[in-house]
Length: 228
Picture 1 (cartoon, rainbow, N blue to C red):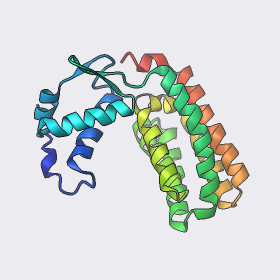
Picture 2: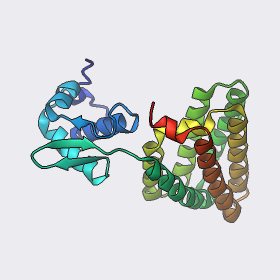
Picture 3: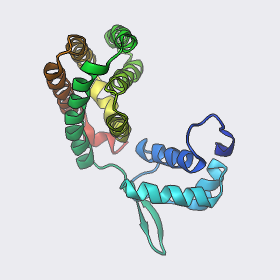
Picture 4: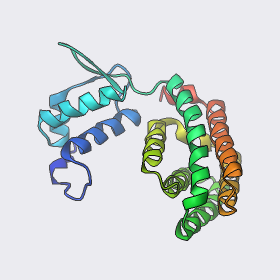
């Protein structure tokens, strides 16, 4: 088994506890750990090269996020993100992404605009060729730049967390050439509204974009993504 030896990742900006928490959360959200799986402190500590203490502390934080349940005298069990949770996240995201796009109209930099423009160009290239992995990466980066451009660390943090919560099923939104091209076209329109400093239109377009992403994901097998 791979030993991640998190103690020696000195370049990581998080504390040891934070790095352990993020690794376990990533494993839950990616589907490595399934719903109702028991998480064992000793086994995870050995896998990550750490003692039980940061693992136990990470478990408490994961329980606060609703990703696991700690049952006294029994253990810690995965609850994960349900299909209903995914729906809720996308509906909340639609409102927050709209707010983010509106605020970006005021704070976006020329460098961020240039990166988003290049992103749209590259995404079109890959979408037309059915390169869905590259398209997914570019889609994520487009949203990340917009989150950064809103100039609110609180809103950026919330949106990045929501983005990560649905990573298992997010690729479903870009699983066809038609939707990939449509999504990229929506990105282009959002950026044009931001460049025009039109917060009302940017907010409307960003909200519609997330609704469209959810509808397409459902159409292309949201339930199946949780049985993979």
